[in-house]
Amino acid sequence: MDSHRRERFAQSSTSNEVDMSLGIETLLEELVCGDDSRAEFAAIQLAEYGESVEPAVRRTLESEEPDTRWWAMRTLAQMNQPPSELLLRSLTDTSAEVQQCAILAICHHPVESAVPELLNIIAKTESLTCHLAASALISIGNGSIPELLTVFPNLTDIARIEAMRAIACIEDPRAIPVLMAGLDEDSIMINHWAEEGLERLGLGMVYLKPE
Image (cartoon, rainbow, N blue to C red; front, side, top):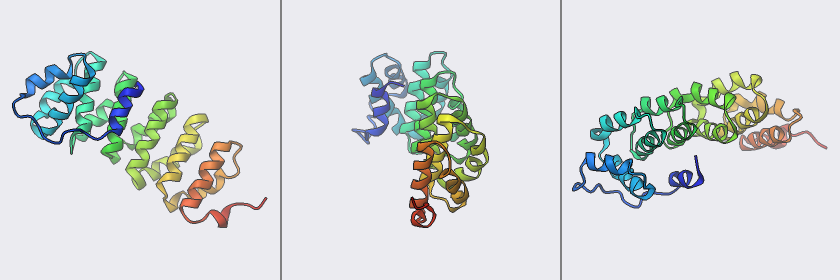
């Protein structure tokens, strides 16, 4: 996903009101017009329709064009309560950009049932998608911890670091043994997040070894 599109998730909408003079079909045409500014406006407007626009968005998600599916997911991310099954479906999209968009949507609309697939993504994907998936697990919170702790011993490299980041940032006491063990690993980043996690739990001074 390019940086301009990622920034859309960090910016608040410029309008919270739907322009009822623009019908759903017209907005759908704008959504796939190829102009990002017009498509973004259409996504915001479509999202304001809520449940009434879900059938149209579902159809758009079936498109063979990854860019069209991306904008459908962008619309779902903008909704107050997007259908969780659509967010989950796009986690396995063949397009990395659509997959990343779905992960970002889950960051804004945490879905605990997404945890298994997010962990699968962490284990198997490149660094950016892996990082986003870990952030989504953090957004889900304590519900992520049991499975995170289960898979953590089998992870390696960047996946292991991102998983430890998630464990540290969720601040769940059940993770204390894993955080303590992380202090003894060879990875500087694992050490960093293990220390961070213990500090967040108020245990840094207790468990950090003296030099």
